[in-house]
Length: 148
Image: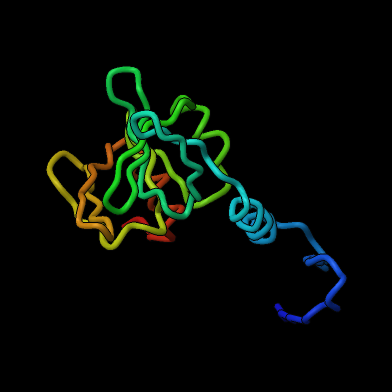
């Protein structure tokens, strides 16, 4: 694959042109990643309303019918349901790892096995999240980890 980067004239709008023989899964993932970069998710901290970039979110967790977005050091409430977040970000780096957690796989530092065929993911901010065994195969596939 050849990548060309050009600087447009001052008065021209930025644009991305994709030329491909086949619109395969790799190209579609690239398109979704580009779209995700410009999207924002509305989050709440007390009376403050913020717009978070998905790349800054380490994981989403559902607790007592509320959904929270965990960033490097902060936690925010979001109004979307976990299944809605899973649908919106299905073609991106977000992956469901349990009934109550969706993790940003680009924020995973390492993964280690635990009891009961589960995995534990260590995130870049030092937090750890458990990957339920029923979600392990999908996560391994998304991470490109071969089954033994």
